[in-house]
Image 1: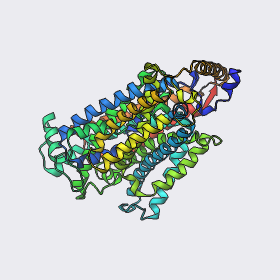
Image 2: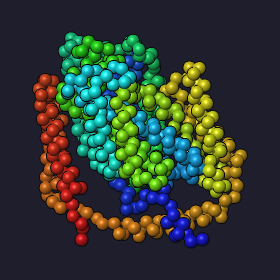
Image 3: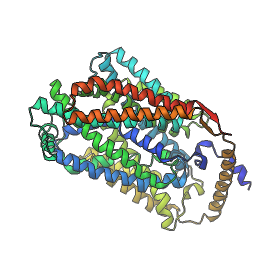
Image 4: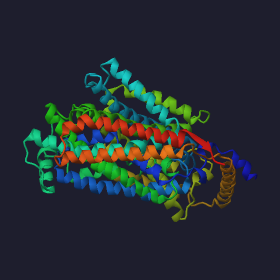
Length: 562
């Protein structure tokens, strides 16, 4: 066999990331900050206020749940991503067979589009406030101007995502530091407003802060239409919220670029600043806005909430946060469909996905992010459990990784059966209300894993495939040699005017520092919330202008290295 010739037949989308394309920590801080300090936080944080849980349970539950989520990223998803250097969408061809790969990728592509569309609709809610478009309370759009806003935002998001991983990471890296300060404002700027409108005493200790939170934000009372839950539900929700990405292994698409599996712990940055601090901040914003506007929190969208408590800067935050979440989701959807439509480039697929996402986002019902999350985490992650079992556990049981591929199966019947068993279990538990969805994901995941291990061992995973394994290993070695040759031919660029780029970068950091200090001054009474609302938008535009200049001079205005 000509192993080099066989290696050359492997499509680009199925090839592992080469050493030249491995990325550093900076991009991962940008991606995981951008995606998890984002528009979903405005929606989920406000929704947590309606759960009938006290503030103490919210903060403790989120703390534990996000530790579990970080560990799942670091110990389950990242190691497989680094070990294989391919996307889940490609890896499934070896594990589940090409037919099941296509079925899963279509399902996951639709889920990613739904998530991206939801974030686009959230962003549009902010622009709605700017142009005075009425609140969209129906499942369908009731104002043509709202549709036009969604279309414009969809074009912007799609153009960024079409430029691939680096463009998504760079966009997020610029936005994330600023977003962190905006969510900090949820404590520093909004709490003084909450104290004023409720007539509460000032805060002089952590105990005073928690008393205010327990009384005015997470009071334990059930808002009409909300749920009566416990701290265990909060833990379960925080853990399962991103299960499709960590336990479900869809973030292999990102971790294939990581230098080390330890990069999985970088996700704690997004989990705790985004899914702990930002959810808490958004909850305070939502409760305060509901009191100020005398409206039920269940009908207020993110634009209405942030406009009331943070002014124009809050609206800008919702717009940008929606983009930073939608971008990686479109990117994932395009990668998933790349394995289905082999003859269409990922860039073209991104444009097609972007159009579909924009059409879906025109319907305000997509803002119901909690429903979308619940469906995704119960349908998609069992496949991640199967892949985890195949990659790590089957070899330890004396079986062979990719055994179904070596058997020549187009469908891994053990995998199909295990996924079906998991989905039937989900359906029964859901329709009989036996188990809350925040607890259902864990037994579903374990059921899929155990079912697969039993069925795989029965169907031939322990047969002898040593000859085929050896051939596959030699093909992969030949592919690595080809990629090294291609990497040597890649041109390397550097900033043409590094001094200008650095000056703009340092200036943007200085502006950001001023923004942070000014925000904290409101908390200690040295500045007023109204002064923050009037001034912060100017500071924000200055930051983005300087960051944009720095990014352009660093990545756009470049020259070849000698």
